[in-house]
Length: 133
Image (cartoon, rainbow, N blue to C red; front, side):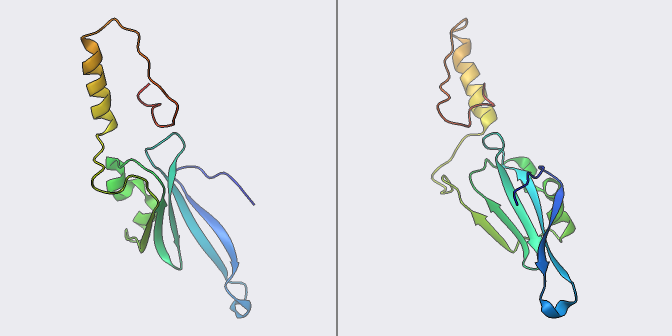
């Protein structure tokens, strides 16, 4: 069954009974969606259960909110430790030093200010430039 999950709150998902001898004891999985600060709607998943806490993320743009537990209430409740991180990221190697979005926007405005008024064309053939617009 597919169902949408909101970003932020802890969601509890039943996994079924532990085993036949458990007298109805249910296994649960908790998941929190955290904004990935990447393309609109992209999220990271923090899973918690009998296996500990696991973070799964695809592409994301590191943000100061990711550095503290306040961004991940599930981790805060579960002792703040991750057992595993599954990182599926295109530009994870240190050779890919990307400027922050704020730095890029500032540089663009600086570059355009000497040519103003001007007609500006920003190609958006790929996702990820919406905040700049």
